[in-house]
Image (cartoon, rainbow, N blue to C red; front, top):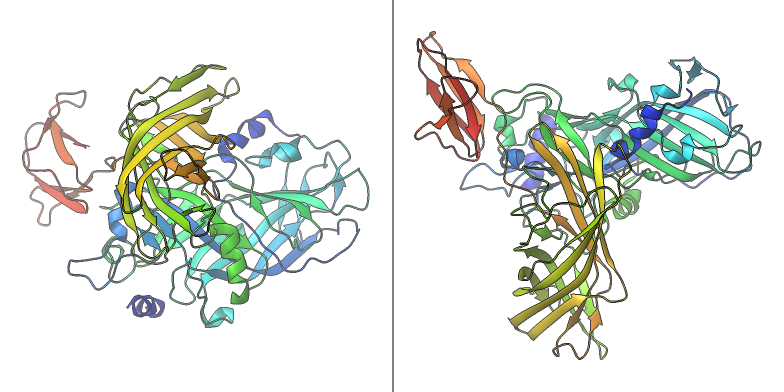
Length: 591
């Protein structure tokens, strides 16, 4: 049925301090990762100004904001379809299908020893000009701090348009289980001014060695701006809410991608996201009343890969493994900044969750294995740690603080064969250290966190009583960030947790085969925009909004708001009549 639905759609200059300061906020969530074909060898100098054209392929993952998740659910019930392909309602993940471009084009400047003289033309025929290093939204520190006389080339993505796999790409179908099926030839991601996307996607390539030739190997980065187009899908609420031309998403901050071992032009290497920051936000580009307004946050781009590699599905497995991981060991995404009303840590009401399984394909899980010495193993997945009480204020600049909830609750699933899973529930204690690692003046406050102790008792499983502890040999480190937002605070938080398991009351401990990423859960949806439309015939008007919120009214904008009786809505579109009045009225939404 999923294939049929997709088929139906298929038919229908000196470097500025400002630039450096922005690095932390800009370095990608994207994990924009470019995997390329076999590398051409050679100790050679950088070539002169020109263009490079190469095929490419890509895939991405978005964590959708809770407000807009219902738009990706199925219509119904009853429904013949589990929801938008690639969307997991269990944790808001939206994974794209495999995407291919036959002619990704990148322009180069002439090579120059740093500092490059400006202005500097780019590409064959000089189709663009870089006027200075300040043209770059962000320059990663390695490039910014490069020694004088280091040879470098300025670059810019001229165009790429990634489309779903189909006959126009020379491929009929990519079938990796980690990505959903898609209608053929749908343009889903594009970048570059020649593809109609602004701002420009600029980069720099620098020799990675002593000044002077040979220039390779080299290091490279791009500040990338994209447009993502999500199509309306029959069988889902998107068919009603999305414009016929798709929901267009853009990023206001650049996605910074880097590679430290470029050996040729065109670049035939793997570009990986450039650092340790939060996921890049994707906003709606255009108004679409009554569902959203331009600039509303749809979600965050946590994983993505774009490889100038080949437009061949035979490379699909390599790309998906590098970007998404495997079916039971996913690649950790960049953490999402959730909207919170306080800076208390942990965020009130939050839990820390691993990646969750879901009934809607593509199927994957984050599964730990505890191998028994005599053979066999116990597997565990779908972890959630909650009841995080004794909240603390984050420590000040250079300070450290601790929180130690004494009765945390853990829920997960266990199995001996990874086919039959049973629920497990336990309680215990935890102690976390939180240290302020921010630089003076940072707009985002960053804290290094560590789980110093974790002791959990899980009684009554089919395998008997289980105890779990923080692994003494491998620290469970994490990161917590806070920045101001007009509606409160944007907070991200995660741990990479190493645990041991015991089935004999702690006499013998079995370490897990790896760590597991635990990230702070999403808060409930926050109210979005209110839309007012005049009724046909000119009598009265109607207020409309998305989500399960209560309408409030007041005669003064400064306060005194009270609930409008009976106005609490459901998860999708809601409306309320407004009758003419001699007095002004003001309306808002509350959770």
